[in-house]
Image (cartoon, rainbow, N blue to C red; front, top):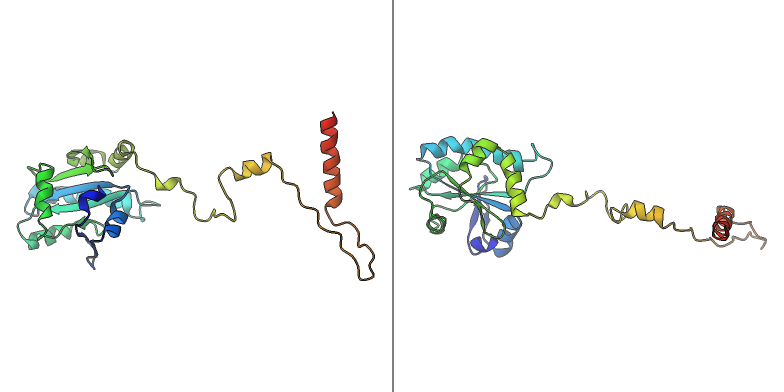
Amino acid sequence: MVDLFLGRSLVCNNRDRVEYDTEREVILRLQNRILLLFFGSADCQRCQEFVPTLKDIFKRLTDEFYVERSVQLVLLYISLDQSEEQLESLLKELPKKCLFLTHDDPYRRELESMFEVEEVPRVVVLRPDCSVLSPNAVSEISSLGTDCFHNWQESAELIDRNFMLNEEFDDKKMRSVTDPIRRLKYKVKKKKRRRRWGWGGGGAGEDEGEEDENEEEEEERGEKEG
């Protein structure tokens, strides 16, 4: 999927209209994600009726107000509008995290031809490897809502980012998920601390815990002999 948009400029539908046009930026935005190519037009009544549903589902899957962590999903609007004013009117109804191609970008028509778009609205669902997961998911999105993503996720074989441990379980606290088990199975003895001496050169006695350590060694020898 990344290869499909390398060398292209993807614009974010936010206030600043941030552009992602370098190879690194495009890869960061699209890699290991399911991509929804939404073909539509402002002068299409069915598109106007479908957009609120698409927006609501996309927000429920990606907005941290609804979910703990955004799913691996990207929405890219491919405008088939006849004017930039029409494009802008529909962008106002789409999510702020949505990406789009500018009106003067000829690649819009190339994608229209590539995916054989004959009517709108049309949502082409792509796997991360650019293969088509669904040629038109409009009815699926309308009927299943957010559940449709889980179906796509299984079919796309995404590398789930959520399997990673939370940042609070860093190396200092837990080196791996099996660390507690390993600590119980392979008991690590405490190192004996050196005998401390008093100012007069006399011994200050054995260090605390040393007597317990000797008792553990005797118990282990007794178990082996038994």
